[in-house]
Each structure stands twice: as structure tokens, then as C-alpha cells.
Image (cartoon, rainbow, N blue to C red; front, side, top):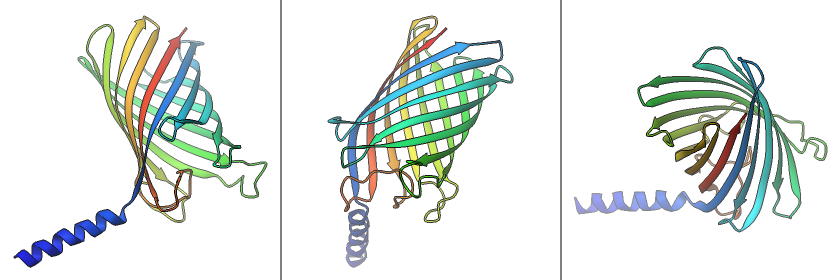
Length: 234
């Protein structure tokens, strides 16, 4: 019995040692603007900046511009273009062009809101400066959110997002997850301040997409993200 326990302990120790992680604390800030054009159509702009490496350096900024069409009160579709500048290890920036279309469903039950977003995304990395820049990276992204309307001022939520690569020759299945907990503070009828904490986990080894590895011995990344956002509707 003691021998079995010892062997089991050794097995888990070796397995845990093999799964090495690079843990990073990050700060993300975004400003979201939305304009109602008609009863069905809206246009929006989401600008985000990210500080990584334990919030010591600026790494990424993007501008996301798109349109929203509301089929019904509970169903809408989004189509967006995202321009991104991401800092390389050598100090220069890499340019990414991302496109996505997303379908969003929501259902309100009392003070609760349940929503699901399915997104098809594809991206090009440095298309005009690298020989493989026009190779597209396809993703299926699924996000589940539960929101609680506590008061007129405060809303609280939890969410989970899962990434599935569609044309990755190295990996199959889930390769990244994001787990959120956050709150909204309604500063006015059409403006909101958001605070959230998010854990982003790389689930499989591989450098096919854009998972950054600061050190070659650490193949998996865990990012602990503190987020601040402000949204304005007009």
C-alpha cells in the first residue's frame, strides 16, 4: 500500500513538473463607443490597450470598428474589422488585420441575463512584410455570460470564453480559455464603467497562433488580467 501511494505521488509530481507555465500579470484598458443609426442598426468602436510583463511594458493596442444588426430584442449579429499593433521582443511592432462575424443570443429572467456569443474570426499577421503574412488563422470563439442586475447602478457578471482553432495542423480542440468575473457601474443612463478580473490560459503546447512565450522553457502561459473599461452610447 505504501509503495502504491509513493508511486502515485511520484507520478503526479513528474506530471506537474512537466507542465511548466509562464505566469504574467496584465492591465487592459478599453473605451467603447456605440452610436444608434436606426432602430435595427448600430455602429461601434472599441479601442483597447494592454500592458504586460507584470504591467511593466506596453505590448498591444487595437481599434475594433463594426456594425450591429438587431434581428429581435434577444438576437443580434455583429461584423467587425480590427487593426492591431503588437510589440515584438526586438522592440518593433507587428501589424495584425482581424475580421470577425458574431451571433449573439440573450435571455432575461427576472434580474438575471443569460447570453451566448458565437464568433467566427480570421486574422492575418504582417501580410505585407512577411512571406507567410497572407496565411489566415481561423478561430471559432464561444462565450457564455451570466449577468445579475443588482441595483440601478450596479451589475455583476461571470463569463467563460473558449477558443477552438479551425485550421491548425498541430492541435485539435480547445487551445485557450478566458474566465471572467466583473461588474458594471452605471454612471449615467447611457454610460458605464467596468472593472473585471480575467484568467487567460493556454491549454495546449504550440506556437501556431499568437501565444507569446517570454522564455523558451515555458511552453504554456497563464495571464492574470485586471481590466478597466468605459462605454458610451449616444
